[in-house]
Image (cartoon, rainbow, N blue to C red; front, side, top):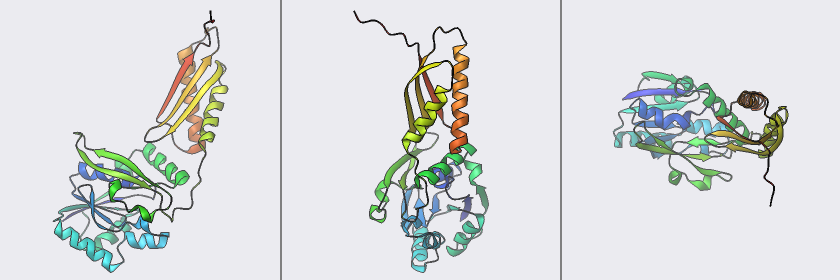
Length: 271
C-alpha cells in the first residue's frame, strides 16, 4: 500500500483540502480524525469530533481503541485500499496512525503549507478561533447529528479540475470545542464603516455589508463628495487598501474581495 502523510497545526484547513488533494495525487482513501473515507464516502471508523474532551479525541484519532482500530483495518482490506492519505497535526501523529493500522512506512510527507495558501490558512485559523467550526470531509447525510449539540451544517461540494464531483464536506462544532471567541457581525460592520468615514472624499456611508462565507467580502455603498475634482479611481483604490490593512490588523487575515459602489449623492427632484 502507498501511504502519504498530510500534517499541520489544528485549525489550518487540512480536512477542508483533504478530498481535493487526495484526488490530485491519485490517492483512493483518507484517514482523518478516526474516520476511513474511501472515494469521498465514510466506510468505517468513528470521528474524534464525536468525543467530549480533547484527550479522548486524540486517542480516537490515533486509534488507541482496539475495536475501533480493528474495524478500520477490516474495512481497508474489504475495500482493497491501495493508497491512503493520513491526516494529522504532526508527522509524529501520522506515523503513529500508520503503525497502529499496520499500513507500513509512509512514503511521502506533505505539510499543510504545500497544499494551502498562507491566506487560506490564516482564514481557517480565524474561523476556528472565532467560531469553533471544524470540517469533516464526508457528506452531511453521514454525520451522526445527535453527537453534536450546537452546530451541524452542510459544507461544500468538492469538484476536480474537470468538474467531476469527488466528495462533500460537513461543518460541525464539537462539544470539546469550548475555547473560541465569537465576534458579533456588528463589529465587522463598525470597522468597515469607520474605515470609510476616515476618507475625506466620502460624503456619506449609505450601506456596509459584510459576508463571512467561503468568500469573505465587504460591500460598501458610499456617496462621494462633490464636485469630483480629485482622482476618484485612485481614492477608491486607497480606500480598499486601507480597509484591507485595518481588517488584517484587527482579525489576522485578508478579505477575499472589497466591493465599493460610489454614488454622486445627487438626487432628482420629485415633480
